Length: 148
Image (cartoon, rainbow, N blue to C red):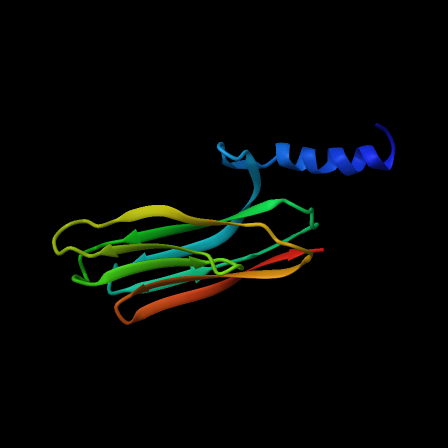
């Protein structure tokens, strides 16, 4: 195979080789996207912070994007008896979430990530939403995946 046909076949294969596996079972691959961060900090009260960014790239049919959001809960036992929530809602409506009930006198610190996978059907702008909340405090942000 040579010329444009070889490039059309080899290009997506090279992209798949440079990305992270989504599942060993179905051997899909995904481009990992930094989906932002969520932080709930109870030092001196409850403070929620959400930050999301933008990813711009070329559309390649069949490529899956894995949106990964870093989350952290800093429990200082200043606020007790609340439920802490972290959420990631993908462009296709899929959802990943983590809830932590703040047990009194126990350090409920948590650090982890939420992720979803998304395979766009065409070039365009796609968005995800991230939210963190505890009691009456909350924060949210919107991330963008722009493919041309």
